[in-house]
Image (tube, rainbow, N blue to C red; front, side, top):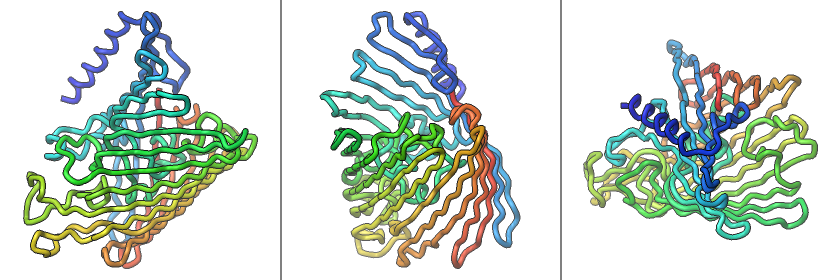
Length: 403
């Protein structure tokens, strides 16, 4: 099935050459090829990328485990339609990890679609985005997995991320001075994650974010790229704050996690068979870059009106909303010939009432950027501390290429 879909996609875009005026191969890392309509009323850039990962984990008082997998394999299409002010983006996941999560709520179909959005610059500095894509949550999540400073994102992201959802986003930016830039984002989403076909069960998800750039914008959108590959010649700083409110959420982590079924229903439970509670999430983050040095810091906090899922008679189920806070600090320095050493400290502190175990992780990373983020080799080693649980040592090596 996967092979047929992939071949159909490639056949479609091969056929589209017959209707294009221009098909040029861009620079490495800038897409496989670009298509331009005969009347220049549309464009399409086609991209492909993959990440090949090997890892080994040593758990205290347990045997070590090694694994090798295609961590990510994706096709990406973007451009404009009718007018440069109306842009689109489509990203498809081909690896097992990208497609995982099939359930009755996705019609038991693999979750091929990562992004599917229209982006309309309808007036001056205003844009509206409609479709499925990343919500404006923590910085580490919004940074593309192709542009990460280390092999993968932090524990803060894995436990607190808003990830992707379907809805619309209103974006705007303005200048307070010649250099001071302010960006604002408001999002209204379905609130149950990506590729959902049975929503909306609970309420909706409302997200607001503001970003401040006191020294002006970063070179080549570097505020959302790991490492200071552009070696900023003047200090650049971005400060962001996000507040997310998921009204009547039916999942244990807002729009992520598992559904909270009640009264003994299973995955085919009908509407009304879910526990609902309001969940609030706060993110505060910053990115600083200067002459090869980079620093990213993130703080997150999640709370809920009621963290224990209850049946209609008031008895508790086994589902608990995971509430608590986390801190992530990450820094790196770009050496000669684009080698980089990076360090990361992450602490996840769950509220005691959840009975979840706190986690602290220390990571040392080494990266070689051959053609920037488009072709790189990354490796890191992490030590995970779990009070009252088993500590863990993890080593990873990853090759990353994208066109």
